[in-house]
Image (cartoon, rainbow, N blue to C red; front, side, top):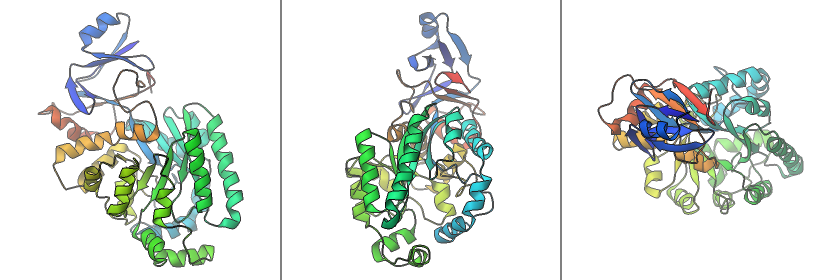
Amino acid sequence: MTIIKPTYTYIDNQFYENQAVAFDTTIQAIDCYENLIVQYPDAKTIKGGDNSVLYPGFINSHVHLEFSANKTTLQYGDFMPWLDSVIANREDLINACDNATMEQATQEMLHSGVTTFGAISSFGAELEVCAKTPQKVVFFNELIGSNAAYADALYGDFLARLDASKSIGNGVVAGIAIHSPYSVHPVLLKRAVTIAQNEKLPLSAHFMESPAEREWLEHESGEFLSFFQKYFNTSTPVTTIPEFIESFDNVATHFTHAVQASDAELDYLSMKNHSIAHCPRSNRLLGCGRLPIEKLIEKGIPFSIATDGLSSNHSLNIFDELRAALMLHYLGPLAPLAQMLIKGVTSVPAKALGVNSGEIAVGKAADFALVSLPHTPNSLEDIALQTILHTQHVDQVIIDGKSE
Protein backbone atom coordinates (compact mmCIF):
# COMPACT_ATOMS: atom_id res chain seq x y z
CA MET A 1 0.00 0.00 0.00
CA THR A 2 1.15 3.54 -0.79
CA ILE A 3 -0.18 6.89 0.39
CA ILE A 4 0.40 9.99 -1.73
CA LYS A 5 0.14 13.33 0.06
CA PRO A 6 -0.10 16.39 -2.24
CA THR A 7 -1.00 19.97 -1.33
CA TYR A 8 -4.12 19.83 -3.48
CA THR A 9 -6.10 16.90 -4.86
CA TYR A 10 -8.44 16.94 -7.86
CA ILE A 11 -11.58 15.03 -6.85
CA ASP A 12 -14.91 15.05 -8.69
CA ASN A 13 -13.87 18.03 -10.83
CA GLN A 14 -12.93 20.14 -7.80
CA PHE A 15 -9.76 20.84 -5.84
CA TYR A 16 -9.35 20.00 -2.16
CA GLU A 17 -6.64 20.69 0.39
CA ASN A 18 -5.43 18.11 2.93
CA GLN A 19 -6.68 15.11 1.00
CA ALA A 20 -4.34 12.16 0.57
CA VAL A 21 -4.90 8.98 -1.43
CA ALA A 22 -4.14 5.38 -0.43
CA PHE A 23 -3.64 2.92 -3.26
CA ASP A 24 -2.18 -0.33 -4.46
CA THR A 25 -3.05 -1.01 -8.10
CA THR A 26 -6.38 0.74 -7.50
CA ILE A 27 -7.46 3.57 -5.21
CA GLN A 28 -8.41 2.19 -1.80
CA ALA A 29 -9.20 5.28 0.27
CA ILE A 30 -9.25 9.09 0.17
CA ASP A 31 -8.94 11.00 3.43
CA CYS A 32 -6.61 13.30 5.30
CA TYR A 33 -3.11 11.89 5.64
CA GLU A 34 -3.38 11.52 9.42
CA ASN A 35 -6.36 9.20 9.10
CA LEU A 36 -4.90 7.17 6.24
CA ILE A 37 -1.60 6.48 8.00
CA VAL A 38 -3.56 5.13 10.98
CA GLN A 39 -5.63 2.95 8.67
CA TYR A 40 -2.55 1.77 6.72
CA PRO A 41 0.38 1.96 9.19
CA ASP A 42 2.75 0.00 6.94
CA ALA A 43 2.10 2.07 3.84
CA LYS A 44 4.89 3.82 1.99
CA THR A 45 4.37 7.59 1.73
CA ILE A 46 4.95 9.80 -1.31
CA LYS A 47 4.95 13.47 -0.36
CA GLY A 48 4.34 16.08 -3.01
CA GLY A 49 6.35 19.27 -2.91
CA ASP A 50 5.08 22.74 -2.11
CA ASN A 51 1.98 23.67 -4.12
CA SER A 52 1.75 20.16 -5.57
CA VAL A 53 -1.44 19.06 -7.29
CA LEU A 54 -2.50 15.45 -7.70
CA TYR A 55 -4.54 14.70 -10.82
CA PRO A 56 -5.77 11.42 -12.21
CA GLY A 57 -3.47 10.36 -15.02
CA PHE A 58 -4.24 12.33 -18.16
CA ILE A 59 -5.80 10.69 -21.20
CA ASN A 60 -4.93 11.63 -24.78
CA SER A 61 -7.97 10.20 -26.55
CA HIS A 62 -6.81 10.54 -30.17
CA VAL A 63 -3.22 10.25 -31.42
CA HIS A 64 -1.61 8.84 -34.58
CA LEU A 65 1.88 7.45 -33.98
CA GLU A 66 2.54 6.18 -37.51
CA PHE A 67 3.63 9.58 -38.86
CA SER A 68 5.74 10.58 -35.84
CA ALA A 69 8.77 11.09 -38.08
CA ASN A 70 7.23 14.20 -39.61
CA LYS A 71 8.73 17.54 -38.66
CA THR A 72 8.86 19.88 -41.65
CA THR A 73 7.78 17.58 -44.49
CA LEU A 74 4.02 18.07 -44.64
CA GLN A 75 2.29 21.21 -45.83
CA TYR A 76 0.14 23.11 -43.35
CA GLY A 77 -2.43 25.87 -43.75
CA ASP A 78 -5.26 24.08 -45.55
CA PHE A 79 -6.62 20.56 -45.44
CA MET A 80 -6.37 19.53 -49.10
CA PRO A 81 -2.77 20.65 -49.72
CA TRP A 82 -1.89 18.87 -46.47
CA LEU A 83 -3.63 15.69 -47.67
CA ASP A 84 -1.82 15.87 -51.00
CA SER A 85 1.49 16.22 -49.16
CA VAL A 86 0.62 13.19 -47.00
CA ILE A 87 0.04 11.09 -50.10
CA ALA A 88 3.19 12.36 -51.78
CA ASN A 89 5.40 11.70 -48.75
CA ARG A 90 3.56 8.79 -47.19
CA GLU A 91 6.04 6.01 -47.90
CA ASP A 92 9.07 8.05 -46.85
CA LEU A 93 7.44 9.10 -43.58
CA ILE A 94 6.26 5.58 -42.76
CA ASN A 95 9.68 4.12 -43.49
CA ALA A 96 11.32 6.79 -41.32
CA CYS A 97 8.98 6.09 -38.43
CA ASP A 98 10.71 3.20 -36.71
CA ASN A 99 9.96 1.88 -33.24
CA ALA A 100 12.45 4.24 -31.62
CA THR A 101 10.68 7.23 -33.14
CA MET A 102 7.30 6.05 -31.91
CA GLU A 103 8.69 5.22 -28.48
CA GLN A 104 9.97 8.78 -28.24
CA ALA A 105 6.44 10.01 -29.03
CA THR A 106 4.94 7.89 -26.25
CA GLN A 107 7.59 9.17 -23.83
CA GLU A 108 6.72 12.75 -24.67
CA MET A 109 3.13 12.01 -23.72
CA LEU A 110 4.25 10.23 -20.54
CA HIS A 111 6.36 13.17 -19.39
CA SER A 112 3.30 15.42 -19.69
CA GLY A 113 1.30 13.07 -17.46
CA VAL A 114 -0.52 10.98 -20.07
CA THR A 115 -1.14 7.55 -18.58
CA THR A 116 -3.60 6.35 -21.24
CA PHE A 117 -3.89 7.16 -24.92
CA GLY A 118 -6.07 6.20 -27.84
CA ALA A 119 -3.80 5.13 -30.72
CA ILE A 120 -5.42 5.42 -34.15
CA SER A 121 -3.69 2.79 -36.26
CA SER A 122 -3.97 2.50 -40.03
CA PHE A 123 -1.45 -0.31 -40.53
CA GLY A 124 -0.79 -1.86 -37.10
CA ALA A 125 2.86 -0.84 -37.27
CA GLU A 126 2.84 0.68 -33.78
CA LEU A 127 1.29 -2.30 -31.99
CA GLU A 128 4.61 -3.57 -30.64
CA VAL A 129 5.48 -0.12 -29.30
CA CYS A 130 2.07 0.22 -27.67
CA ALA A 131 2.50 -3.15 -25.97
CA LYS A 132 5.86 -2.06 -24.51
CA THR A 133 5.01 1.49 -23.44
CA PRO A 134 4.25 2.03 -19.74
CA GLN A 135 0.93 3.67 -20.60
CA LYS A 136 -2.35 1.92 -21.14
CA VAL A 137 -3.44 2.00 -24.77
CA VAL A 138 -6.79 1.76 -26.48
CA PHE A 139 -5.64 0.56 -29.89
CA PHE A 140 -8.12 1.82 -32.47
CA ASN A 141 -7.71 -0.28 -35.60
CA GLU A 142 -8.67 2.07 -38.40
CA LEU A 143 -10.91 0.93 -41.24
CA ILE A 144 -10.50 2.74 -44.55
CA GLY A 145 -11.66 1.94 -48.07
CA SER A 146 -14.35 3.44 -50.29
CA ASN A 147 -13.92 1.23 -53.35
CA ALA A 148 -16.38 -1.68 -53.29
CA ALA A 149 -14.10 -3.75 -55.54
CA TYR A 150 -11.47 -3.93 -52.79
CA ALA A 151 -13.88 -4.11 -49.86
CA ASP A 152 -13.30 -7.76 -48.95
CA ALA A 153 -9.50 -7.45 -49.05
CA LEU A 154 -9.54 -4.27 -46.96
CA TYR A 155 -11.93 -5.80 -44.48
CA GLY A 156 -9.79 -8.92 -44.18
CA ASP A 157 -6.73 -6.81 -43.40
CA PHE A 158 -8.73 -4.83 -40.84
CA LEU A 159 -9.88 -8.03 -39.11
CA ALA A 160 -6.32 -9.37 -38.97
CA ARG A 161 -5.11 -6.17 -37.31
CA LEU A 162 -8.04 -6.19 -34.93
CA ASP A 163 -7.33 -9.79 -33.90
CA ALA A 164 -3.65 -8.99 -33.34
CA SER A 165 -4.52 -6.10 -31.03
CA LYS A 166 -6.96 -8.28 -29.08
CA SER A 167 -4.33 -10.90 -28.34
CA ILE A 168 -1.25 -8.83 -27.54
CA GLY A 169 -2.21 -7.92 -23.96
CA ASN A 170 0.21 -5.79 -21.87
CA GLY A 171 -2.35 -3.06 -21.20
CA VAL A 172 -3.53 -2.81 -24.82
CA VAL A 173 -7.30 -2.80 -25.34
CA ALA A 174 -8.61 -3.31 -28.88
CA GLY A 175 -10.87 -0.69 -30.43
CA ILE A 176 -12.23 0.24 -33.84
CA ALA A 177 -11.80 3.51 -35.75
CA ILE A 178 -13.70 4.53 -38.87
CA HIS A 179 -11.54 6.79 -40.98
CA SER A 180 -14.20 9.23 -42.26
CA PRO A 181 -17.52 9.51 -44.14
CA TYR A 182 -15.74 10.05 -47.46
CA SER A 183 -13.32 7.14 -47.19
CA VAL A 184 -15.27 4.13 -45.87
CA HIS A 185 -17.83 2.22 -47.89
CA PRO A 186 -21.19 1.82 -46.09
CA VAL A 187 -20.96 -1.97 -46.27
CA LEU A 188 -17.61 -1.95 -44.49
CA LEU A 189 -18.87 0.62 -42.03
CA LYS A 190 -21.86 -1.49 -41.07
CA ARG A 191 -19.71 -4.59 -40.53
CA ALA A 192 -17.24 -2.75 -38.30
CA VAL A 193 -19.90 -1.02 -36.21
CA THR A 194 -21.64 -4.36 -35.71
CA ILE A 195 -18.42 -5.82 -34.32
CA ALA A 196 -18.02 -2.87 -31.96
CA GLN A 197 -21.60 -3.26 -30.80
CA ASN A 198 -21.49 -7.03 -30.32
CA GLU A 199 -18.08 -7.11 -28.64
CA LYS A 200 -18.52 -3.81 -26.77
CA LEU A 201 -15.33 -2.35 -28.23
CA PRO A 202 -14.48 1.37 -28.07
CA LEU A 203 -15.44 3.10 -31.33
CA SER A 204 -14.02 6.24 -32.91
CA ALA A 205 -14.62 8.05 -36.20
CA HIS A 206 -13.29 11.16 -37.93
CA PHE A 207 -16.24 13.39 -38.80
CA MET A 208 -16.68 16.78 -40.48
CA GLU A 209 -13.08 17.87 -40.12
CA SER A 210 -12.79 20.31 -43.03
CA PRO A 211 -14.96 22.55 -45.24
CA ALA A 212 -13.86 20.44 -48.22
CA GLU A 213 -15.37 17.32 -46.60
CA ARG A 214 -18.77 18.97 -46.19
CA GLU A 215 -18.80 20.36 -49.73
CA TRP A 216 -17.96 16.95 -51.17
CA LEU A 217 -20.55 15.03 -49.17
CA GLU A 218 -23.33 17.58 -49.59
CA HIS A 219 -22.76 18.86 -53.12
CA GLU A 220 -20.33 16.42 -54.82
CA SER A 221 -18.09 19.38 -55.58
CA GLY A 222 -15.07 21.27 -54.31
CA GLU A 223 -11.48 20.20 -53.83
CA PHE A 224 -12.40 16.61 -52.95
CA LEU A 225 -13.99 16.20 -56.38
CA SER A 226 -10.67 16.56 -58.20
CA PHE A 227 -9.00 14.48 -55.47
CA PHE A 228 -11.36 11.52 -55.96
CA GLN A 229 -11.26 11.85 -59.73
CA LYS A 230 -7.47 11.79 -59.66
CA TYR A 231 -6.90 8.97 -57.20
CA PHE A 232 -10.08 6.89 -57.37
CA ASN A 233 -11.67 7.72 -60.75
CA THR A 234 -14.99 8.64 -59.17
CA SER A 235 -17.11 11.76 -58.90
CA THR A 236 -19.64 10.51 -56.37
CA PRO A 237 -19.34 10.15 -52.58
CA VAL A 238 -20.00 6.68 -51.19
CA THR A 239 -22.35 7.96 -48.50
CA THR A 240 -24.24 10.97 -47.19
CA ILE A 241 -23.76 12.74 -43.90
CA PRO A 242 -27.05 11.50 -42.39
CA GLU A 243 -26.40 7.95 -43.57
CA PHE A 244 -22.97 8.02 -41.96
CA ILE A 245 -23.94 9.30 -38.52
CA GLU A 246 -27.05 7.12 -38.37
CA SER A 247 -24.78 4.09 -38.74
CA PHE A 248 -23.57 4.70 -35.17
CA ASP A 249 -27.02 4.92 -33.58
CA ASN A 250 -26.55 1.86 -31.36
CA VAL A 251 -22.94 2.40 -30.25
CA ALA A 252 -21.73 5.42 -28.29
CA THR A 253 -18.93 6.78 -30.47
CA HIS A 254 -16.11 9.24 -29.90
CA PHE A 255 -16.26 11.39 -33.04
CA THR A 256 -13.07 13.29 -33.84
CA HIS A 257 -12.96 16.96 -34.93
CA ALA A 258 -16.60 17.77 -35.92
CA VAL A 259 -15.40 21.30 -36.67
CA GLN A 260 -17.74 21.64 -39.65
CA ALA A 261 -20.70 19.81 -38.12
CA SER A 262 -24.02 21.65 -38.36
CA ASP A 263 -26.29 22.42 -35.44
CA ALA A 264 -28.65 19.68 -36.58
CA GLU A 265 -25.80 17.16 -36.71
CA LEU A 266 -24.57 18.17 -33.28
CA ASP A 267 -28.11 17.82 -31.96
CA TYR A 268 -28.19 14.30 -33.40
CA LEU A 269 -24.87 13.38 -31.80
CA SER A 270 -26.18 14.67 -28.48
CA MET A 271 -29.41 12.72 -28.80
CA LYS A 272 -27.49 9.49 -29.45
CA ASN A 273 -25.10 10.03 -26.50
CA HIS A 274 -21.98 10.43 -28.62
CA SER A 275 -18.93 12.51 -27.66
CA ILE A 276 -16.27 14.48 -29.52
CA ALA A 277 -12.46 14.47 -29.49
CA HIS A 278 -11.29 18.05 -29.97
CA CYS A 279 -7.83 18.61 -31.49
CA PRO A 280 -7.38 22.41 -31.56
CA ARG A 281 -3.82 22.63 -32.86
CA SER A 282 -4.44 20.12 -35.62
CA ASN A 283 -7.58 21.98 -36.68
CA ARG A 284 -5.64 25.25 -36.83
CA LEU A 285 -2.69 23.85 -38.77
CA LEU A 286 -4.94 22.20 -41.36
CA GLY A 287 -7.17 25.26 -41.78
CA CYS A 288 -10.28 23.47 -40.59
CA GLY A 289 -11.71 26.23 -38.41
CA ARG A 290 -12.64 26.41 -34.72
CA LEU A 291 -14.82 23.81 -33.06
CA PRO A 292 -17.51 25.87 -31.26
CA ILE A 293 -17.27 24.19 -27.87
CA GLU A 294 -19.82 26.66 -26.53
CA LYS A 295 -22.36 24.82 -28.70
CA LEU A 296 -21.19 21.47 -27.35
CA ILE A 297 -21.66 22.75 -23.82
CA GLU A 298 -25.12 24.08 -24.66
CA LYS A 299 -26.13 20.80 -26.27
CA GLY A 300 -24.62 18.64 -23.54
CA ILE A 301 -22.05 16.91 -25.77
CA PRO A 302 -19.01 15.74 -23.79
CA PHE A 303 -15.67 16.54 -25.42
CA SER A 304 -12.11 15.46 -24.81
CA ILE A 305 -8.93 17.34 -25.66
CA ALA A 306 -6.48 15.38 -27.82
CA THR A 307 -3.26 16.08 -29.68
CA ASP A 308 -3.93 14.17 -32.92
CA GLY A 309 -0.63 12.99 -34.44
CA LEU A 310 2.64 14.63 -35.41
CA SER A 311 1.42 14.67 -39.00
CA SER A 312 -0.71 17.65 -37.93
CA ASN A 313 0.97 18.92 -34.78
CA HIS A 314 4.38 19.94 -33.45
CA SER A 315 4.25 18.08 -30.13
CA LEU A 316 2.33 15.43 -28.21
CA ASN A 317 2.63 17.28 -24.91
CA ILE A 318 -0.91 17.40 -23.53
CA PHE A 319 -0.24 20.73 -21.80
CA ASP A 320 0.68 22.32 -25.13
CA GLU A 321 -2.74 21.22 -26.36
CA LEU A 322 -4.54 22.51 -23.28
CA ARG A 323 -2.85 25.90 -23.61
CA ALA A 324 -3.83 26.09 -27.27
CA ALA A 325 -7.45 25.30 -26.39
CA LEU A 326 -7.37 27.89 -23.62
CA MET A 327 -6.31 30.59 -26.08
CA LEU A 328 -8.51 29.44 -28.95
CA HIS A 329 -11.79 29.46 -27.07
CA TYR A 330 -12.06 33.08 -26.05
CA LEU A 331 -15.81 33.12 -25.41
CA GLY A 332 -16.90 32.88 -21.80
CA PRO A 333 -15.08 33.09 -18.45
CA LEU A 334 -11.53 31.78 -18.27
CA ALA A 335 -11.50 29.76 -15.03
CA PRO A 336 -14.56 27.60 -15.87
CA LEU A 337 -13.07 26.94 -19.32
CA ALA A 338 -9.83 25.72 -17.74
CA GLN A 339 -11.79 23.43 -15.42
CA MET A 340 -13.68 22.01 -18.40
CA LEU A 341 -10.42 21.45 -20.28
CA ILE A 342 -9.04 19.44 -17.36
CA LYS A 343 -12.19 17.30 -17.53
CA GLY A 344 -11.39 16.91 -21.23
CA VAL A 345 -8.17 15.03 -20.41
CA THR A 346 -9.51 13.07 -17.43
CA SER A 347 -13.09 11.93 -16.79
CA VAL A 348 -14.55 12.66 -20.24
CA PRO A 349 -12.07 10.60 -22.30
CA ALA A 350 -12.08 7.86 -19.65
CA LYS A 351 -15.79 7.36 -20.25
CA ALA A 352 -15.46 7.69 -24.02
CA LEU A 353 -12.67 5.10 -24.18
CA GLY A 354 -14.24 2.82 -21.58
CA VAL A 355 -11.26 2.78 -19.18
CA ASN A 356 -11.40 2.58 -15.39
CA SER A 357 -9.45 5.76 -14.77
CA GLY A 358 -9.73 9.52 -15.26
CA GLU A 359 -10.95 10.13 -11.70
CA ILE A 360 -9.54 10.04 -8.21
CA ALA A 361 -12.21 7.85 -6.65
CA VAL A 362 -12.23 4.60 -4.70
CA GLY A 363 -12.08 1.63 -7.05
CA LYS A 364 -10.53 3.53 -9.96
CA ALA A 365 -7.11 2.58 -11.29
CA ALA A 366 -4.20 4.13 -9.40
CA ASP A 367 -3.16 6.28 -12.36
CA PHE A 368 -1.88 9.70 -11.28
CA ALA A 369 -0.08 12.77 -12.56
CA LEU A 370 1.58 14.90 -9.88
CA VAL A 371 2.41 18.49 -10.84
CA SER A 372 3.76 21.50 -8.95
CA LEU A 373 2.64 25.11 -9.29
CA PRO A 374 5.39 27.76 -9.10
CA HIS A 375 3.64 29.63 -6.25
CA THR A 376 0.59 29.24 -4.02
CA PRO A 377 -2.63 29.93 -5.99
CA ASN A 378 -4.93 32.67 -4.77
CA SER A 379 -7.91 30.34 -4.71
CA LEU A 380 -8.80 26.71 -5.33
CA GLU A 381 -10.83 27.81 -8.35
CA ASP A 382 -7.62 29.06 -10.03
CA ILE A 383 -5.72 25.79 -9.84
CA ALA A 384 -6.89 24.35 -13.17
CA LEU A 385 -5.99 27.54 -15.02
CA GLN A 386 -2.62 27.92 -13.33
CA THR A 387 -1.82 24.26 -13.96
CA ILE A 388 -2.46 24.67 -17.69
CA LEU A 389 -0.47 27.90 -17.89
CA HIS A 390 2.60 26.82 -15.94
CA THR A 391 3.12 23.09 -16.48
CA GLN A 392 5.43 21.70 -19.12
CA HIS A 393 6.19 18.32 -17.54
CA VAL A 394 4.77 16.56 -14.51
CA ASP A 395 6.80 15.76 -11.40
CA GLN A 396 5.71 12.13 -11.19
CA VAL A 397 3.61 9.66 -13.14
CA ILE A 398 2.03 6.61 -11.52
CA ILE A 399 0.30 3.87 -13.51
CA ASP A 400 -1.53 1.05 -11.74
CA GLY A 401 0.21 2.09 -8.55
CA LYS A 402 3.71 1.96 -10.05
CA SER A 403 5.93 5.01 -10.54
CA GLU A 404 7.10 5.43 -14.13
